[in-house]
Image (tube, rainbow, N blue to C red; front, side, top):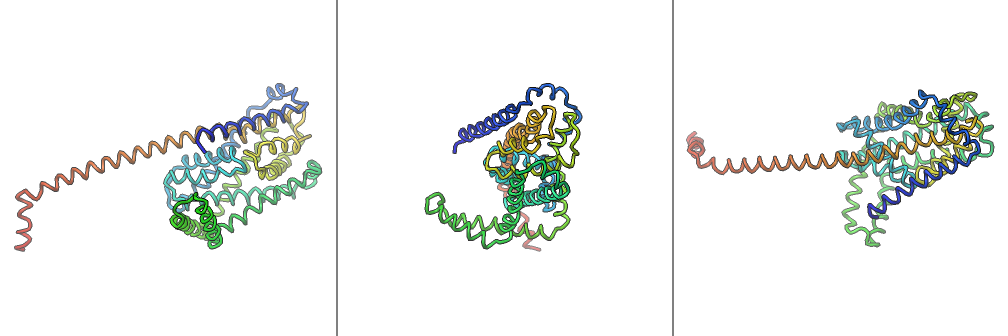
Length: 380
């Protein structure tokens, strides 16, 4: 697929998502009070929304950075946060968020991190985030069971299915990490199939390369299991990151000066909305997120604020990542070009130095001092 087609598809995804948000938000009859609601927003809570966004991205980057540093890779924290933002960007423009993690591994590779350790870092973050959000949702659900059932009614089954899908992803990923022989067999069959379709030229070479990566990945995951301190640190970063992500609805609620629903009940619904919509096979879970917000928070966002509340919340949890993500992707390409130029300059300087040394070495045997050294050594 050409870069032009990819750009067009990405633009279409964003346009369709914006259209979905506008249609769902403005179809609400209470949107007539939107401008009044916007004008009444408390700026300190809006600032809190920016902090929630920063916490979500920042602590995600900190988790990856912490793991890589524990393995001896001295990579800049800002660069790793940039990698996290690149992952968020591609997750939001690809179906089922399928493009985010491969692009993170690729970005880490370009930053000098081996694929095996980049894959382990990304996998660790995925498992940690999934387990954290599942435990958060379960805990809040148990603590606020009556409220959640009354608020959702018949939609409670959607949340249950979403929670189960999010949770089952954890053992599947761990199976891929620790059942080395099973994954090897599956990959070999897949490569053999691709070779028969003439999509792979060097079947044995690709299998050998994949096997090497799997060996390193498996070893890295085993080493991580024996590092309880690093595991606890990963869960701490996931907790802070997930609170930033789910807490954005709480800040949106208070930004309109609303009251009547405690923050922990709003956070409960936010967690349930996340697990309910995240498995939707659409870029950015578009449609499910917007429809879920309107259904899950009906009666919570009052006084004509639910439609505009959806717009504000979606901006900070989706469109901000698209806007910042584009800039981060372009900056990442700039950094790679600069790094490439730096290496080329070093190679040229190294080549010039070697040529100069060679020229000096060719003339030295002809000097009297050099010519006399073997004779002195021989006499000795």
